[in-house]
Image (cartoon, rainbow, N blue to C red):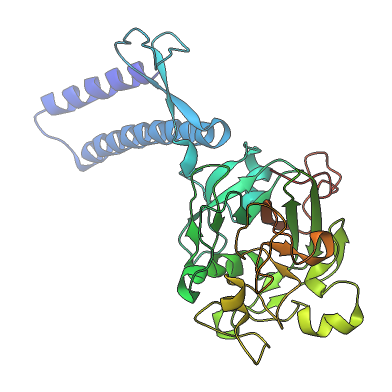
Length: 344
């Protein structure tokens, strides 16, 4: 049909040009036919672009035809004759669409766990996060300790912007208080703490409505109902007489250069070698000094600790802080994936 249309258009143009004079009506008809042809070509290009975009979103690659297909080498395969697959970089996430968090990404294409770029709010630049698509899926990871290779005894600006490595599954990092604020400020979240000791035993704690304030309020922490197996250490544990001094609820964030805790005789961040929501001082500090033996001795209880599980004088091996929307439905459609097991 397109070929016949083009032939008709050429014949008409030649006929009109052969005439000694063109009327205004004939000139208008020629211009109209040329415009229709241009619009048709643009519609075809738009259709192809939409098809490629759909394949990028659904399959993370698209096929690009080549006039001459070279024989497959050791690092190249030809899946279809005359067609070579063009893959997207794995670590950069989706290059076209930036989801608001890992839960939205999971809902859209259910990818494997890995690093992806997200954009929680319209005014933020996209940033890289690790998405845990196991354990029910849809978790955005905020903090991770694995080996002690990354120093968590940092200043205020470093905790604000984030630090660590964002390449491998086992990398250690702090996502950054500003990024956390953007992810958590709605409040309808479920925060999960995955904890592992040096014998390989795992446990977890979950907190509903976990959120932090903005920098003007020193990223003040608030959270709601607890569930899980590790014990409610963030609320100060089970002893009421201790909770007023070690509960982390409503505490501001402190670092070695910004002391916002309630300890009047010193700085909890300096003593405990990391930034955290300290009181006088803590029942939980997942950003403390990384001791490689579990049990440790020191002047201060400054390890990577969770009071209600292994106590203040046992420094944990692996920790992960990860969040997803409170009403997220897991891959089984039950909404019950959070307590299924601790992620690695």
